[in-house]
Image (cartoon, rainbow, N blue to C red):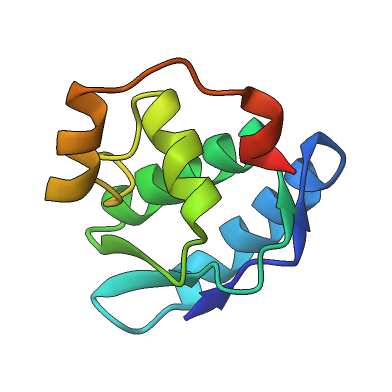
Amino acid sequence: MLVLPATVTLREARDTLRLMTQALPREAEPQVLIDASGLQQFDTSLLAVLLECRRLAQAWGKGFALRGDPPKLTELARLYGVDGLLGLATATSVAANAGATATNFTTLVS
């Protein structure tokens, strides 16, 4: 299991991706599991990091899953339409999306 740092913003995204890219091939399990439970501060850069990790896992023939994702990450992923790609889409989020209204972006990433 790979563990995300507490903060992943544009400033940390490059280093976080580098570390994840180095660690991914060493994962022995058939599914790469990323623990997001420690996330406290993030922005859309985290979505790019996670999508690249997913792409790399698939390239190596592995599955990809997130664990402990904070609700704000799920909301941000839904806002950008990548919740399904990251395995965050649920029946609840699909139902909520059907009646979605405008969301204040700053509340999602703070």
